[in-house]
Length: 219
Image (cartoon, rainbow, N blue to C red; front, side, top):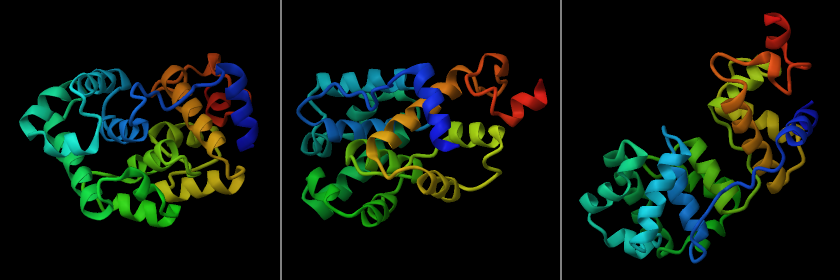
């Protein structure tokens, strides 16, 4: 069923080409920054902040370490909760320097369980953010679960009110352990959640309406 859903969504929407980056020098670091900034906001707002950081040549661990909090706050203001997010970015940067000499590749050399444990130890990085960093920046196979995933798969009838780790295990158990598949599937789920499976769903137009319990019950 999971692969069937993936194929329906892929056929409907096409490739999503996540994660979008603009900095060729430090793309992995840019993804980490984006994953932290995108908490509780839209990507459009994050993109403005990323462009500001790029303009100031701050998509670099050393330069972000050195910049004063007030100056960083101004640059990422568009992302919302900018004071808290400045602290989160600084927490990550300090962690990266204290444990990995500021080197992202050194951090990413860890196996997935250790890497995830390390990221979750950073104040301000939760499971979804950590897993986004592992999948999109470290390019390691782990499935990212978000609010769209929970909503959509509960409505379809595959999951019930399970927690993050249980839903993640279900995906990883029923799909090949493949980075590109996990990447694309997560992006397609977000696309479906934004366009069709909203809080007030557009069931009649949804590409999954033929296999969705919610769609059948509402119809």
